[in-house]
Image: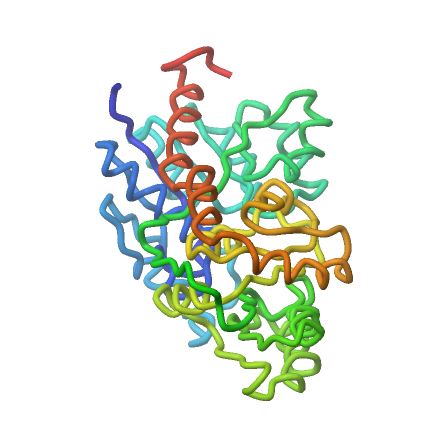
Length: 354
């Protein structure tokens, strides 16, 4: 197969790969590194503190959360606009442009003859649907079938879906019974750490929470609703975690609680838990039923109250099966296979040019 010249345009919120929080940036890193290993020429448009085996095109000196914390920047869009502009200015250097920054910039992907792919990593809005319909020459890819259902109805066609992947080899699993329930995510209402705590309390099990508030509204939620429940005995909060800390948290957990209150487009933390052999107990919203296979990698229920009855069942699952089944479905190499196929189809090197 011929080698491709690929531009990956990452979000600028955090570096690639991320130090702690940053699911999209983690996916972009796995994609970029594997494409380089396969011999492709990859240029990563990202913050200057990013690391890559490809070529780094630094859009700004450091990631935006750091810049904003130091009052070195105030508005994200200025920098994201620069990333898009710089990728388009160099479009002739590439066979394909792959954007991970949101469909707010999809119209700009239509102005270059170089084929573009936009992966939507968040929940689809009416604006996203409008942009995709208005610029059909730009390929829009989803990360779950639930996520693109509304778009498929409006386009009268099924957009391509490439599930997020995980580097299972980078997680050391445990096949022994866990010591606590775990919660890992943003400390906000959408992720719902409060109900995670309540579920653990009703199950008579300790819980360890990791993650942090990402904005002022979530910080208020955390201070008013989560912090009063923390006793550092039955309810422990450890803050944001890096990769090794995340691995220790998840591998030693009996199960991961995922009581989301919004239609989750994918939920990367669920397959990270599975990589550790840890089953998932999840509220069936959004993509949850696509990611969690009932009775194999965890259980899901249609209501938060229904999760209580699933704790004992989840803890009885074979943790070796949890990891093996998830690895078969969500290996990052399988994700890269999907994108590589999409790239070649989009530029007309296999099949028909869409």
